[in-house]
Amino acid sequence: MGPTEGSVDLAPSFSAVAAMGHSSLHLILLALFTVVLMATVPALIKFTSASIETMSLVRLAVALVVLTPLVAFKHTFRSVTRKDWLWLALAGFFFALHWWTFAYAIKTAGAGIGAIASSTFGIHLLLLNNLVHRQPVRPYEMLLIAVCVVGCYLVVPQTDGSGSVVIGFLVGVLSAFLYSVLPLIHRHIIHLPTTTRSWGQFAFGGLCFLTLWPRTDWNLTAADWWALLALGAVGTLIAHSLWVKVSSELPGIMTGSIYYLHSPMAVTVGWIFLDERITPTTLVGMALIIGANLILLTAPWFRLRRRNLG
Image 1 (cartoon, rainbow, N blue to C red):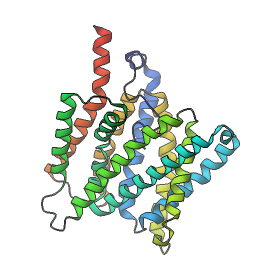
Image 2 (tube, rainbow, N blue to C red; image 1 turned 90 degrees about the horizontal axis):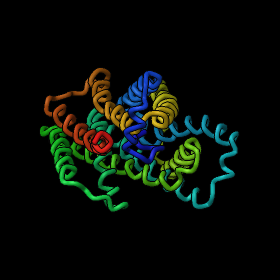
Image 3 (cartoon, helix red, strand yellow; image 1 turned 30 degrees about the vertical axis):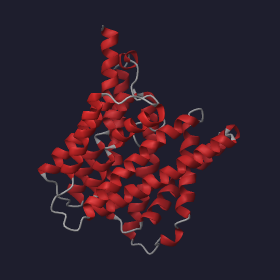
Image 4 (cartoon, rainbow, N blue to C red; image 1 turned 90 degrees about the vertical axis):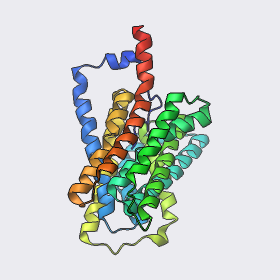
């Protein structure tokens, strides 16, 4: 889950941040723990030999088995209109595309590089807001986009003779773009409970993957099954539920900033458990990408803070 799913406002009011006290410490620690869980996902995707379609269907099945009784028990379906169902279906479609491209990027380019590619999420959201909501792109934001592009160039190894890592990274950037579309869709159904929106996204995403059933492969080893169960239970259900909680109770600027720890953590996990190579150039590129996106995230808050203090 990204920093803005289930939330519309990226930059909270100054008073909301200022009002935070020691009581929020446990939420911050919970957010950090959730990001650690998320950071294991790329390594698990890379580790398992299961196809993307098999892996995605198992992950969604685990989540839906738990979520469906909860949603049905609360009778939230009664308040879902025909228009809401259409938006949920659209969210599921883009979510499925995001998941497929994200997994492809990791399988092709590696857990670390695939995770770094997903960090371009903020740049895509900026450009989409400009396109959809006509929000102007300021000169410093254009500079940050250029910094992010330079970072992307540095992340991809120049010794990749086959070009597979380059393709995987570019697909990962596409995955980040697809994911940045989801908050725009969720704005149209923000009146629905988060569990209902999550269920709809997972359910319709699962239907999309069911159309790819011929590409599934169920002849898996025990290690593959354990990895798939971990992806479904830890990477999807638990991490998703915890992130919904912290992103709902902490200011968006804080959860967004914490979320960008995902990439360095995923790179570290890939280096430790998958023996993935990390070069100084890759680290510099990752720093440029994350730095540019963090500045984009925090700049509105600093502008608001200056106005309040001025």
